[in-house]
Length: 151
Image (cartoon, rainbow, N blue to C red; front, side):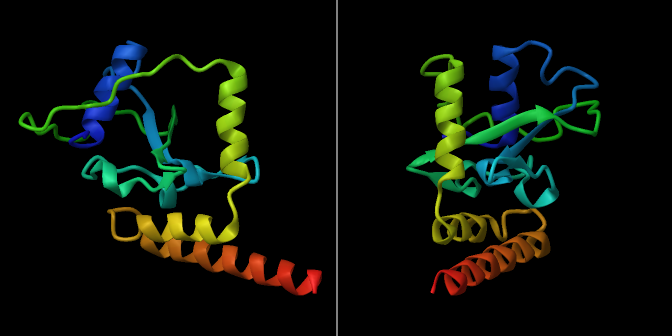
C-alpha cells in the first residue's frame, strides 16, 4: 500500500501538476469530514504526513480521502516517502458528477454506529484526539436524543 501521505500527494500531483508544487496548499482529510452534507475541515479528520494508509477509516471497504485547497502553504512535501515501500494507488477511472454524488450520498447515509467507529479508528493516528473524542461524544448524544424522541 501507500507508504505515507507523501506518496498520496505525489500521486495526486501526477493527476493535477499544480498540486504539491512549492507554495501548494493541498490538504487531505478522511471521509469522516463530510457529515450530513457539511464539510468539517478541522484537525480531527486530517490525514497527517507521518501517517500510514491504515490510519484512514474505511467506508464500505474503501479508504476515501477528501483533497482540498487548505490554509497552509508548503515549501516542501511535508512528509517523508519510504523508497522501499512502493505506492499501489492507481486510478480506476475519473469520476463523473453522478459517481461523485454517489460517494457523497454513501458517506451521508452512514449510520451513527459506523460513523463513531470510523472516528474511533482515527484516534492515536497523530491527529487531534481530543477533537475526535468530542465528535464521538456529540454523535452519540445526537443518536441517543434522536432515539428518545422516536420512542
